[in-house]
Length: 167
Length: 309
Image: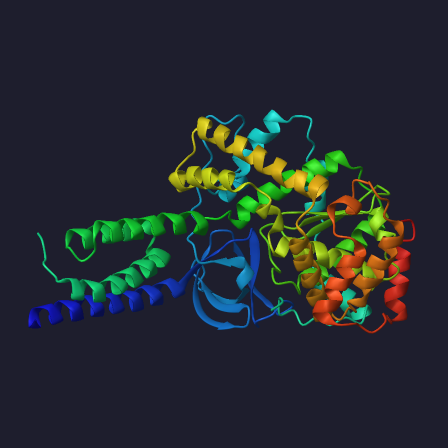
């Protein structure tokens, strides 16, 4: 009977210890899941930009407020606030382009290539659908309203712009 | 090695192992869990049936967790956008395009998904149809016909906020047949961190083409379910309230739309619930709003930017 109890305690404590350490380490590291984002001095858009972060960059989470996380960017060691929508708990692995695809991928494409649907797939899609123009899609992606312009737009229109990023 | 434990002890241990297994699954991936289930079975703590159950759960979580990533969503959205801009003519007015981007990108900050892989971008379609289409990831298209249903900036903001709602809830991706996601995910999963061969890229592209067809036929021909449209309207009201627009703008716009929709047209007449249904549903959730009373400046810039619409 004693032996059994010891086994139960051992298994339960092992499971608990495992859970705790696993939770602690999982909460710590996250990856940037958008092409580019900013580390800000305060938890909100329109706060001062401290540093920029790119897709796949890893961060250590040090705190949270609403939908914002205080993080340390591993590659530079700088600390700032990033909106949760830009972060993923999954590790993002960047892979180089496939061998044998028609045409060489540019450096930026290689950098963005993840698993699954990626620039290589788009390239192959374009090869198969040559009549399909991406001109307007490329063009509309260039339309970016800066933080200052958004603030001006909001102010002139008498809008609230708390920049907390929703939630 | 066989450890003998009686039924009672096994009964206590089973939930412990299951709990630990589920936590491990979330944190360390499924392989560990499958191994744990096997170990449990060998140790006599789990029956083979229980072990198989845990393994099965692990596989199921593996599939649903490995959903489409924001970068994949971005590439899907670009091609959906290409299909839309090849089907419809684009309205080329720098002033109007700039204005809807100022409006749309400013209110997107207040959505539950302020950042997407490639960001939110807006374009006007040169058609009298009453239509708006949101590609996954934030490429949003709105027709001249729909903008003409807007009498003020609050109403135009409502149109864009409804589309942002679809993006935020990833409704476009929901339109992809589940069997496609599973196979795309499987291919991607196997190849994570490795170079894809040409054959694999070709296979992925075929899945990709199928996914694009699923989404565009839903957006253009069939429409989302009533429940998803309701969700987008509710997201719109929340976004509008957060940035200081009057959600009555949405109701006003829907009332104008109601007088202009032509039965049988391949636009909102076919793809969306009737304006009356949408208004009733909004009022059921939020009650009535006060009339739109926007400032002079807001109305001036709205009129100026969309004068030619």
